[in-house]
Length: 135
Image (tube, rainbow, N blue to C red):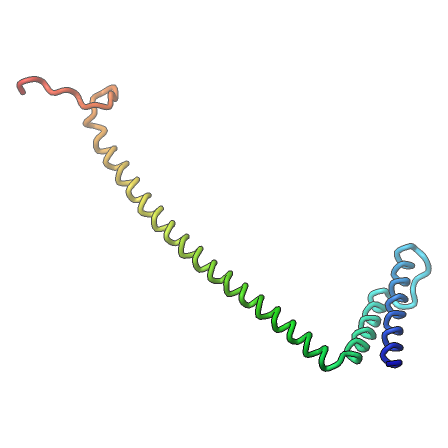
C-alpha cells in the first residue's frame, strides 16, 4: 500500500511540476528546466506506470469487459449504419432509374410536339383549322 501511495504521489508531483513549468513558460517567467512537452510525457509515463502497477487483476478484467461491451455496441452501430447505407443506395438507384425513364418519355413528348407543330394553323390557336363543310 505504501509503495502504491508513494508512486501515485510522485506521479501527481511530476504532473504539478509540469503544469507549473508550462505556466512559467506562458507567463514569460524563467524558462523551465525541461520543455513542457517533455515534462508532460515524463509525468504521463510515471502516472501510467504507477496506475498499471496498482491495478488488480479484477479491475483489469472489469475494464476488459467494459471495453469489450463498448466494442460490441460500436460494431452493432456500424452494422446498422451499413444496412441503412445499403438501403439508401438502393433507393437512390431506383430514383435514378425512374428519372431516366421520365427523361426518355419527356424527350419522346418533345419529338411528338415538334412533329405536330407544322400541322397547327398559323397564329397558334392551339386547335387545328376547321374543315370545310361537305368536303
